[in-house]
View 1 (cartoon, rainbow, N blue to C red):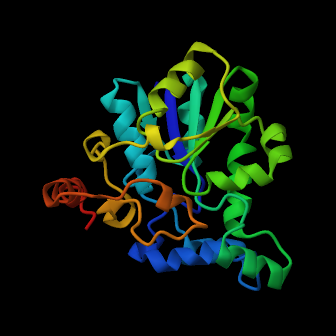
View 2 (cartoon, rainbow, N blue to C red):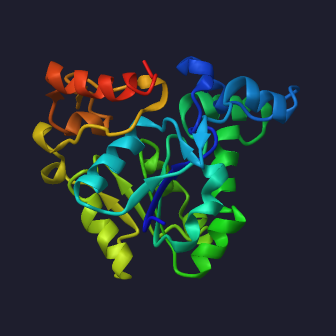
Length: 259
C-alpha cells in the first residue's frame, strides 16, 4: 500500500461523458432532478480497475508525476475506493477546483437556488468519509492543493473542523516533495503555503504526466501574457511548452484511449 494517496472528490473524478462542458453541471445545487440521476447525467464515476481511476484531473497527474520522479510511494485512487488503500497511508493529497462553490458559476447557482452546489457537497463528503476520518485519528496528514486552494483562506473554521493539515496555493512541483516528506516524518506543516515566484518551476522542472488525464486534456503552457493586476497567474513567468513535450503527454493519453 502506498504511503501517499492522491485523489479528488466525486465531481472531479469524472469524464463528464467525454464532454468537459457537461462538468459545469457540478456547479449547480440539488434541484428538481433526483440527485442520483443528476450525478449520472453530469458527473458519472470515472472507470476504475481495483479502485485505480482510468484517468484523473490533469493537475493531480502533474503532482503524481513529480512525486514519482522524486521516488515517493504515491498512488492516485478513486474517492469511492479510498477505503481499500488508506489504512497504511501516511498522507492524503486532495486536488480541488472549487471546493466551497465560490467560483462564478457555482456561486450564481447557489444564490438563485439557496442551496450548496454539488461540488461543495462532494468535497465535504470526501473529508467526512468514515475511512478518512478513521485514518485521520490514526495520524493521517491531509494536504490540499489545486486551482481552488485560494478559497480556504475564507474558510478557516472548515479547515480546522475537518483536520486539513496544509493547503498549497500555487505551482507546487518544486515544493511538494519537501512538504510531503515533512508530513511522512510527522514534522510540523505550514497551514497555508503560498508558492513564491522563486519557487515557481521552470519549463525544464515541470514533469510530463505518466498516467492519463481526464478527457485527454493537457496544458500547452503556464502563466499569462495579459497582465491583469487582479490575477495571481500573471505574477508567474510565462512558459510555453515545446511541441515535443505536448506530444509526449498526448501520447500518454492516447495509448490508454484518452484523446
